[in-house]
Length: 239
Image (spheres, rainbow, N blue to C red):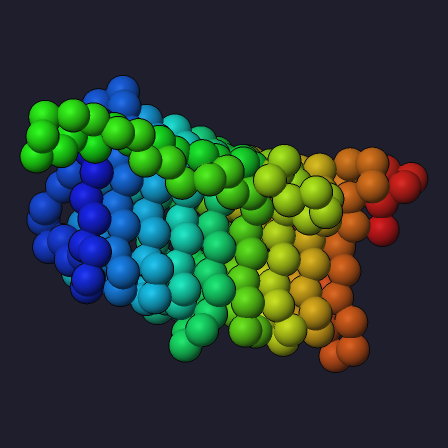
């Protein structure tokens, strides 16, 4: 495994640098912000305890993994420069103390679900210890943060086990949500929620809302759902 911990500052990767843990796990953590170059592993966790997770200039693919866990006190990517990923399962949480939002561009099909990542750290006394980032689910923002997920394959939204609230996507306050599936279909197995922001769901093929899956906003927030090349199917219990 690979563990990189900037205990008193930022973790900064040049866009041409890389961290690889083939068929294993990588954990990148900073007390400040994390600037991501290119990280490849089966399981990846990125934690910016008091800062943001940023896409380094010149990077080719920020994260290539099976499972990806993103946690930041501030924003994860930006509206003008998304984090780029090629993963199967993702969860992301932006608390939004100073800046808020989640901005992801994914190459292929993925699910929003629960991810936990553990690595083994080697010490100066030649002993090892396991460091784990606890199970985290869903895409969640605080402080009016937007959530944007653009995908090059089908997207499945699950309310993961770490949050027992049946919400797969939750944008705080006026934060808006865009799920844009450029190839394939969009399946909602759990809720998409915004306080008063706009919710836009697009899929190149069909859109399906499973039993009990709801899309919710309020006040001036609007909802747009577009199954551009297929059927829009709601279960009788969805709303």
